[in-house]
Amino acid sequence: MTRVSVVVCTYSEERLDYVLGCIESLKKQTLSPKEIILVLDPNEILIAFYKLHIPDDVKIVVSEGYGLSYARNAGVKNAEGEIIAFIDDDAIADKDWLKNLVKNYEDACVLGCGGLVKPLWQNGRPRWFPEELDWIVGCSYKGLPERKTYVRNPIGCNMSFRKEIFEKVGYFKAGIGRLGKNAMAGEEAELSLRILEKIPGSRIVYDPQVVVCHNVSKSRGNVWYLLKRSFYEGLSKALVVNSKSNPSKALSTEDRYLRYLLKVAIPSKLRRIHKFESTCHLIILLISICSVLIGYFVGLSAISKFRERFSLNLK
Image (cartoon, rainbow, N blue to C red):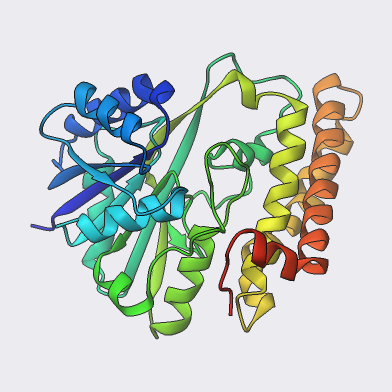
């Protein structure tokens, strides 16, 4: 039987309730994980706090540095399973999450697998927030495939990889992803691209039967967060593109998504422009697209500055 190590990363005592809820959902899996690993930032107060509140059967690991990439790498290095699954600390796994996930690894060519991430809006979905932009809150979005298919990369809240691939292609790049509450992203895409480039015949699967639910706090349901997250998404993509020899391949997912917006989503909303929600959705989509593009071109024009700022080694 394939053994799965589940890695959960957290950085703040304030997230305890989320963490406990996540761990509880992992213990109720129809396919029990080999181990649950909680990775903490190297903060003595944080470590002491979670050691006091976390069940004894959860393995606590301390990261070598601050930020999500460092934390995920620490989880990988301390994992004993053949498959390493990652779930956000504020997410709840469906009871069949691991069972459905492991099925995809029956194909030896599959080196990574991710699934559907459903939003749990704490304050209800804002009427003006279109489903096409659910990626902003770390969830699956309208425009993603509705059936199992091969993809460039999974969503970080619900992803997994064979442990052996980290020994072959390296680990998550520190600096591209999250650090505390910043809005950077992109380490999943960068790692996945490295896997697909360096291991011939490799595949990464998106399976919508592999489900987790992601809590969306009230603080993320506002226009300011949407603008910030969109900008930093563009900036992150610029960093990823500058680390790859084939920029067009690096942006294949974004190209497909943009074509979906221009050919399907936006025309659909224009046909219902007389409705308040459609008008709001159209405006917000256009604002987000512009913010992403601004972030992307800012990143391209100042790549040396950001390389130094985030201590990146992109080449």
